[in-house]
Length: 335
Image (cartoon, rainbow, N blue to C red; front, side, top):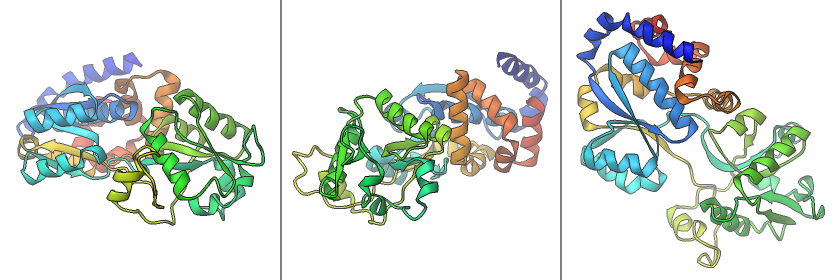
């Protein structure tokens, strides 16, 4: 893979003259490289496209959700954050947007993302009529627990994870114990993955919590269940569902909170980024493509840098719709 990176760097040298004109419309900026696989991939794809296609000079800054947002909001850099998960930062983000420091240029940079309750592809094919959470939880017999087959197994989150609280309280709100279910603590991230993978590889039914984009969702074509129950509101979620069972006396039924991800930029980039701003507003990774790339990164032990080149070579039909014809020609020449 490194020869691809070297080749790209060599090709970049030949694009200096073409890129110089575009540089006037872009400039030098810092971009967040979030410290999880999809964040690494997106940042490196953006870096190649912005540098090769639009003449920007991009420096990647590694960090997590809160760390990156705080730096953008208080210090004005990095100027670009491609995969900013905003649920925990919503009030701060809204204030920053209202005051003009930050702009959300893309409110859906990845399709099909989010957390919730998932089932195996084998279950969907065997029971297409059971296509919502509410329909599925009426049939615990289809998900027999290994230790007590008279109960249905719902696999929640390991102890200590925030989602253990939400899943426990949703389990209570929908009276799943009364319907014949057992809430399973998988013990660890490896236990959760192992439970899912074992069922998927055997073509068995599995119901449990997970999230996307992730490599395991892509590998096993896991399916996210819809909710018939509407979102129950922020008060019910924040002041009960998201708390411990001891703090949540009366959990009310609700759909899982919607996961929200934005591509956000500082006011400096909004004013000076030129056509690069338009690119970021159009850049949307299809969920199935993203999950496939995360699987590639896992299996090949590929870095975000290497995976970005793989993505750009293998998915030209996707990224060419994000850029101008002129930019596409420059990027292809570099590849």
